Image (cartoon, rainbow, N blue to C red; front, side):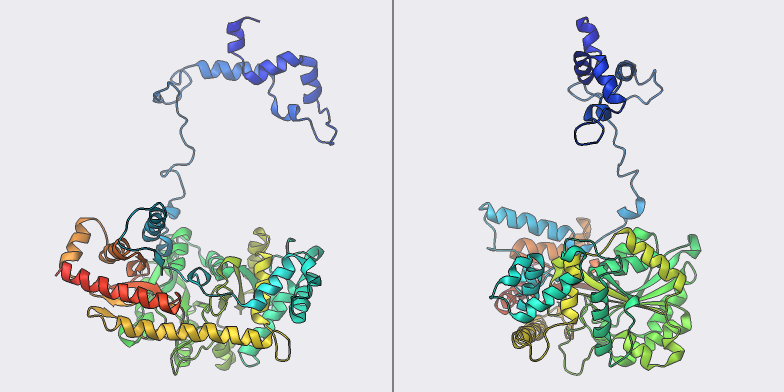
Length: 559
């Protein structure tokens, strides 16, 4: 064969010719390898005519083939146009924003790298107070939980005398519920049956005997997964009939991001900052009435205890919300992942389900409710295991079948997260070997959080130009800050929101990573930042001291 002819044929075809046509035909006719499957050659080698034709077509100019003319790169190769570009991607994804891991956090990561490389900064470490990641901030895991998870992950340890007997029996119980007695197996899509039963018993105990059906429990990949799934079920319609979902402002950006991704309408109702971020029914009514002019409001989201605001809603407030939802025919979504994080005197967590049932059949038989919990918050802080559950109340049977179908598409929530959820709802009991140490660790963690909540409020309120409401619950403070007009102008000239400008300067000068309030929503003309109260008490004091010094310097600089 001539050299020119060889150049026109692909290298794979050349290899085929050297082996001989008969061998190729044997493979393409289904010759089997020793493993029983079709030969690799039969699946990967194109026929000679295909290779030559393909090469011949590629030698034609794009114009002759009716394709747009492509620009040559420097080495003479025509770059292939991307199938997926910023112009051809799903447009709703471009509307998604998630401030908790936004540009400030990206810059914080860069600063950490620069410090590790020896670059000089005005600080020696970056303190990330942007996200509720308890263990990353130094909170210690509950020993019993980790012991059981270790035993479940490596059952050989069941023979180790270092583990208490109640941890072993709990691990055995969980493994018996797993396919093949292994956490590496899939679970039923709705979650392991025994875990859902334990969740149901936990809810009954928490709510003073209000019944709970395990069939209404869905184990989820953290609470976020359940929330996103429910919103996906709720959203429909186009134009003025598009689904509208009411969310609090300030809000956790999971909600705004998910609504943007789904193409739903975000209906803002504002919490009352002057009354410790309380929820006012008249504000709910205002937001709803206005929204009905341009969308179809179908759901109301409540975060209690609040994120980012840290408020704990009163029982009367919850009653008022349930009555409002019943009157306006709204599906209630109750985000209750911080239900153990209540610190302020006179505050108490009331579950929406408990209040709903105590209000009688007029409400308990009609109001549709989905509530959510997680292993990521409270005293556990086990964010990485992605464990959670949701309970549905009064859901239409046909819709429930669709919900079950939807979760089955994702096979199941992570089984280690399901196991951890089981431990959270069914911890060591009095008289068991691990009970005393469990109670000691749990109490110490929650007591430390309460101390840090109080400290944060006290120190921030000593700074002129910063006002911090009491941190009644959850893991964050959301103080209001005064930004001088000169700084607002400089931020605007730089194309930045003023509180983003403020937080970015704080990061560059102090190494403290906070999230601007604009990422959560705030009333026009007000500025805030969110910070966690999770760092160890000594580091939190340093953090708050640096915030105080920075704000004073910033105010002086731009006054």
